[in-house]
Image (tube, rainbow, N blue to C red; front, side, top):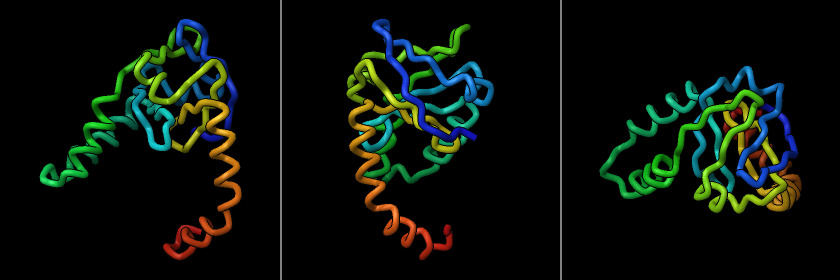
Length: 144
């Protein structure tokens, strides 16, 4: 399970070191794509296959479905974890996420999100203020 928050540095060659405690679970091949809220989503290969199978079953006749598929799938790239646990973030994804030198890797169960550190801190403060109302909504559907 991928959980936790880790601050890391994106080096000048756009390489990002993955937390050592996640490396075994992630495997050697990952998929990075545009995520929601202007972050990047990183999936282990097996999780990516599950997600894309579900997405491919959505009705093509709906414009929203086509738009999301284009957003999510056309931005995806397969990357390999190098011998020291780093991945290469392509320029177009770095630009999409507004990534600078300081980034945050957030473990979100079956994926990692890569955030610009400043943007993450702002987002996190906002969500922390809404935690009670979010929990109430989840309680209404039986999650909490």
